[in-house]
Image (cartoon, rainbow, N blue to C red):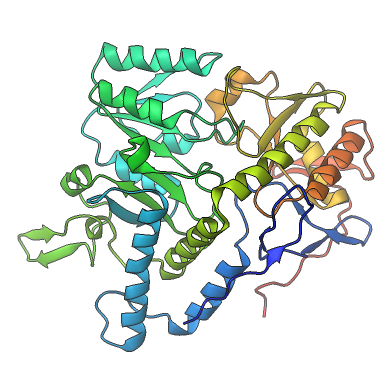
Length: 436
């Protein structure tokens, strides 16, 4: 099964050529019967697949078969593919010898799995996505301070006050894009006898992750954030807790032997992967990570930094808009900018950007309610997020449309329903897609 490499996407001279996304050239309907190029600035929620990923999945479909116990050639092939993918994920995140890769549905699933294995309290910051806040059964929440330095000091004080088994932190905020100093936090956790898990949902698509170099014990990630939206994620890390935990799912594949009065469970990762795995999602995740490796970190970071700088400058110049920050001393950010309005509804603005301009953004509190409530002054924000397929034209188109809409330049009348703001008259056609 051959996998072709995607052709590079043309970009301005100041930004390196980058991988072509499968949604390149997508046009969406807007009010009035027109179609316009889609500007996708909601990549922090879910990203479209890389073209090479979409092709790899299409190539795999005819070979799809059972995994691990089938004797047919397709079964042998996909079994090898799944185990090769496990190695690809481990290499991409710098796993140590002895670390395990357990395939999950997404980051939330991975963190819930780890929560079932933690032998004690978990210390967590209030800045976390709900996926890294809600699963922990015995959590102790530290409220972040205005600066990262003060926040680290508060974490240290909490870890010193009473022993904890685990420190759970995000690698990059899904609200502000701000990066946390993961290696420092790992050292801090270990100094106090705790381990550390990193929610890498937003970090993985944007930065190099290295468990061994940074001293990270566990990492959780999602394929749908990293250009492989086929329903797979992973938990990577030390095996001992996972081997001692009850199986995450009870079923076939997780067992070595079953009797009516006794069950012998496998060690990790099989212990937590009962049932038929998501072969397509696992394959897609591995191909996406290999492609990110091939692109190299420098090109991706330079591309994103240039666009994020442009985005912040353009947004900051719009009257009545404030950019939300979590820390005064954040050393760097991934390509996420969240803003709030001095007046008006960000939900209405987001609806108009989509319905009238073909621009996708996100409005709300981004499944990080405690953090947003602490750092914002309004009840909801509007988030624009960038990725490797984003361009300067995307940024400018968004900023121009935002300025128009915030100033009251609506081309339609909207009403607020249970599903959010909608045009009263919506003449945008819906494609049939799966209707056949």
